[in-house]
Length: 458
Image 1 (cartoon, rainbow, N blue to C red):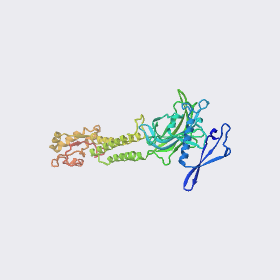
Image 2: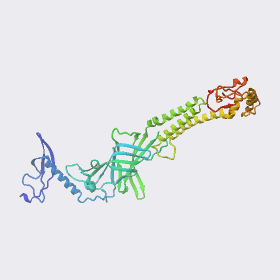
Image 3: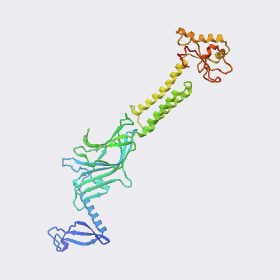
């Protein structure tokens, strides 16, 4: 009697626990076709066939899932949108979970981030009935169903992680909702304005949308409540993340209007590194250059050496601070600070050059060569006084009549070759002759003519 009956079975799993062994009860409900029904028990009753081991039940369920997928994909066309022919666009909802972010490169003007990129949409062609609410499928099924052609408008280089397998997830629910998730590393462009560097703020965008479908065919929306999230404890080395506003946009291209999503990462730079490595050293170097003001003006080599050293040190700091910056057409705040530091150090050198000129060359210093010095060594008192008074006339103030009544005196740079070979000098000139250097110095001797002690400083 049972040979003429056709039975279809609907499998329901009910977990049971009996003592220390765990089994599943397999319940089979019988339905009839062509008017036939089982004779016993009556129609609508449940037959319990006994307890079947879990492995056997799992095999049956797996075969049923495979049959469900094969039936769903039998007449499925993966080149057509889920809403093809319905007159409405397909809506793709997107959210991002950012695991890490950085580095942010000012030289290349880009940034990198590691994230979980999730997209969900509804495809009614893949809806099914049964006790299973959702199916987690292999990524091989991605080639057999339709999925959005999302790409990053400002992306430079992006890739999917493939260790140990491609990091992708595909899940289908009963009503045809599809969740497609993948782990990506994205390197995107970040146009930067560096005029206030290193006290600047930057906004790095991430723009995504469809490559081929217009807004009339495919629309992107942010997932409500969880659009852009960050892993707890995520931090950047050089920046503070101040916010991540997001919005929906429409891009107009020659091919038409396209729906896109944009999220902007607002970053504020840490200034501690530049404060320690640039600002504090530059301030100390400038202060060090001012030490030359307390060095005697006759110590020419010391003052010039200190000034040149400070300028070269600032040059090294300036070059080092710009190694990670692009060659922009404008000056940054750091450039202005370094330029001001250069100005202070160079002004110190110019100050010494002015002092050196106006106290030596501009004040009437008469350098003598060796032959002239030998002539001065053997002259007498009267001849020395007459010659010295004659040389006073070379002073810049010869227009004043009182100049011939003044006396000459030796400057600190006037030296003798030996203390035993002193020039015979009149007693009236002794108060004006000052020797501020050692007599045995080998420096070239010079004679100074001064017109008035109140005007010239010894």
